[in-house]
Length: 155
Image (tube, rainbow, N blue to C red; front, top):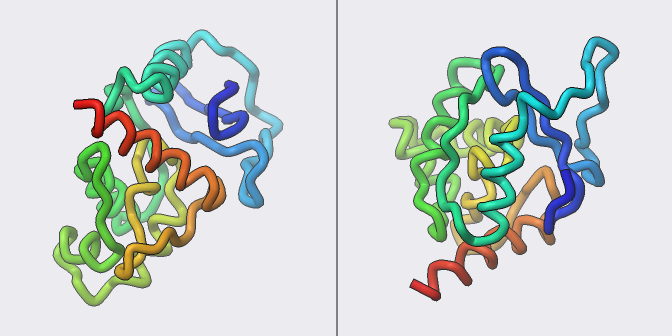
């Protein structure tokens, strides 16, 4: 789908959405041989993403099927609790999952997030407030945070 942060590849199966990938990213997902192009199961995901980019949606209500380790899944669940328009540091995220010494591991799990935007890893920043690491690129991370901050300032 086209978006303000570039083209996104959405991948899902019977269990739900599995992947959101930035087409122009260094870490862009390659289309796998067994995949088939069928937009019908992803209509709701596209609708909700368009509403998010249009400032009409702050949370996503989609069946998700992320694949990862127990630790990664725990980090990704915690990412979904970061409120729209807010940011936290990697250290704060590590504390939220009850493992304050796991800052680097949290960063790595964040970097492996298979569904950026939907699972809002862009809301995690450096402890000094700097924008750090984002699979879609720092310019896109800034765009997403600016979008959310702009919408919050209208309230």
